[in-house]
Length: 336
Image (tube, rainbow, N blue to C red; front, side, top):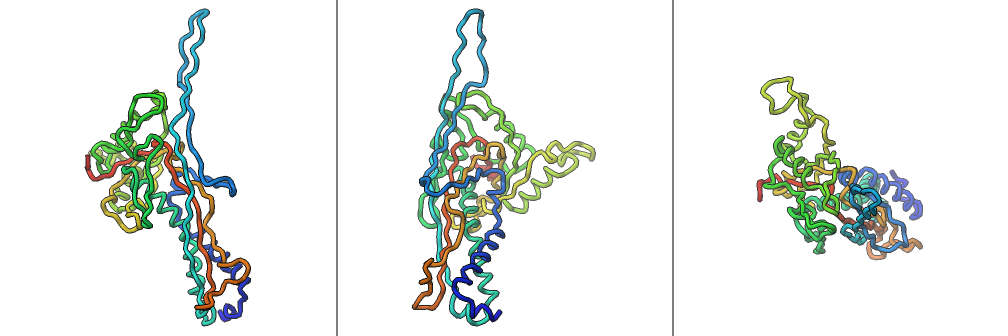
């Protein structure tokens, strides 16, 4: 342990980077690993925005009579949504006392915890796209207004989304917001079946293979009961097939039931829904992966007032939900 007191600044920087990266590897990226998020690495010097849009055409051919001219294909551009990057940051210091008074464990713990913060922050921000899915925006803990709309200008989860090439509207929030149950699952499946369209208003088929929930024990136990029981959980006797067994991939998202600051929000603990790993409806662009840097790369890094060695913790990214297709929500609170 004593060697920390005689470690040079340059050697300590190398050690700090290793421990920071180990901390980053320990972070739980619930949303990025959920199958709901499309993660993209953005090249440096390529601008701070990315525009997402889709192009679709009619799904079916038209009858052509003898010597008649063939019908022309119809193409329509879907709604677009622009992702803009932003940075998150904090500075942290390693004090003179920590370096010289045999506090190696405290130093390592501090650095590794710093390594988790960037990914923890991205995970919270991604989770809040679901937390506030029924709203058009929310106020972040730093006072910024975060838009949560899709390309049609409505909330991510809404009762009357519009199509760019049709007057048809559709919903992706379940009527009356029931708690998770077999009947509610069937109602959401029917909603998906009857509310999935191409931009031209033709019925589309998208596989929804994810059942997402937050980590409320009642919700977790109910979901596991429905997905993993060998018999119908509402059957009168054993031997009745459970049609939901292994039908969906269960994804637990523990930060959905939080407020903008990341504290518990019990009003959202019953949130649940279905999603499509084929569509990955939430987009994350990473401009600047979480990393740390010494306060001054040229070596002037010691605070002359405190004798502390200063480091920077930084990350930069953007989040956007171009289309509601591939995501459904029930608040589980029986609200209209």
